[in-house]
Image 1: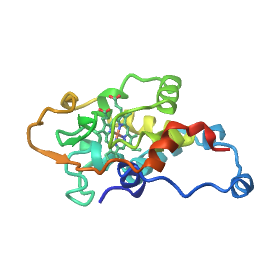
Image 2 (image 1 turned 90 degrees about the vertical axis):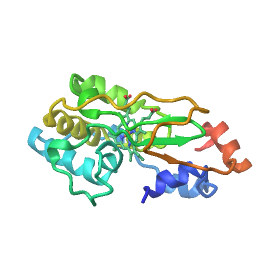
Image 3 (image 1 turned 45 degrees about the horizontal axis):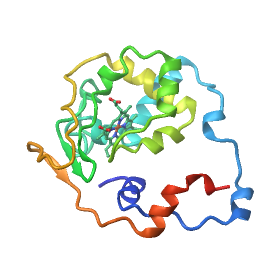
Length: 188
Ligand code: HEC
């Protein structure tokens, strides 16, 4: 049900040790360095595509995953009352229609490139998207218009959230994963 990258992050698993030759062979500019080439209309269509396939709707649109994606577009991205409870406390997928409504392109590109949230939001995936992908998400979300209520406030660890919530019972991270998190700059 959850995207693979997310399940991986939650289990604190770590990619196979990197081979420096292989890394050099696939060295390409970071996607965020690619200039935006789409027209406004193309950005809008691409934004809808991104929101459909990159998982945003799965968590930020109530009932989307449960109904197999059969939620009208007018109800997309309004945030959710489903709590995600784990060692980080309880988080709620934000109302992106409200959050992004007044954001200018430059502000969003800076904010999304540096996005750091609590789990299970795949902030790492958003940070790794090209500027074009992130701009497309902004344009599409704004096109839906500001609507809905803010999602419930984050609850710190140790507080039992009201129903409904999804509870993660995670093993302690393996030592290898913990040390690779501590030294992210080691990768070539
Ligand atoms: C697995 C569920 C999940 C998926 C998939 C997901 N989100 Fe989230 N998102 C969350 C949760 C939960 C939060 C709140 C995190 C917190 O409280 O720190 C959040 C927070 C955010 C925030 C920060 C909002 C704020 O108020 O600062 C942004 C922006 C965001 N998500 C955008 C996206 C986009 C864009 C996508 C698709 C690429 C996406 N999310 C996919 C669950 C998800």
